Image 1 (cartoon, one colour):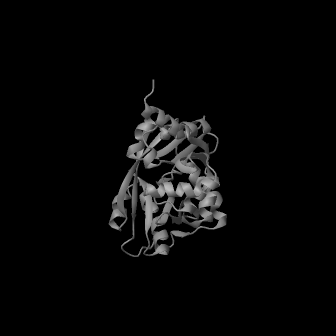
Image 2 (cartoon, one colour):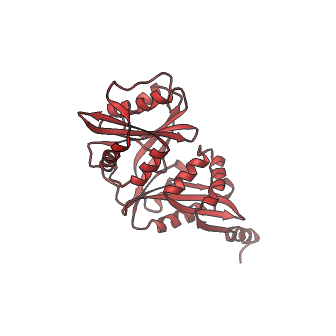
Image 3 (spheres, helix red, strand yellow):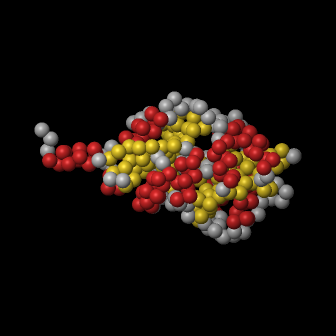
Length: 289
């Protein structure tokens, strides 16, 4: 026989419904991320939903959990924005959301960036760690300029070259995401010998601006692209999420973008493979990967 406490918990669980993530949930999702001190704006949630899909847990019409995923072609995807309200944690709601997400994205390999608290949830579902992301942010201490003649503003005619670079660097088909990011931000290309050899996107996000993706062949080229974006921004809050192996961390800290947190990159399935020579030096955000 169940105790009264268990019966009460069952009633609470029965009151929680899992539904597809819809535009009507955006305000509730924003409040949920604010509770967690995640710096998303309503516009950031809206862009994420336009590009992907997901699930929401509702209790009496209130959003108490979210999870989303973004398809990159037919074989790969990223997952993120997996949040459960503080007063609803410990009741397997995170597992319920994650299982729905995995069923929805079935057959795709899925990458995500996990907080320390989420690692065991993902490990139990077969995700394995493959890297670490460092979150850098702050207001740059000084004026920055790229090397003369190396970086210029992106134009519409650059998009085919940008897509090629991105596919080679990530192994993913991310056309829809890149189109949306460029609609909402500024793009930069690094050109050498008449060829586009790197690109970066800078846009409003969270507490200020985010610079990412940044795709280049070397850390020196990646730095030049970032400096081009910083030159236009001036003294404003900037965030850059870069891998532990990017060789940019010490420089970012030196210019005032302190390392404030880490995330563990995990994959379920076969990781997408880079064909090079370009590689990813900064990601668009920790959800899109």
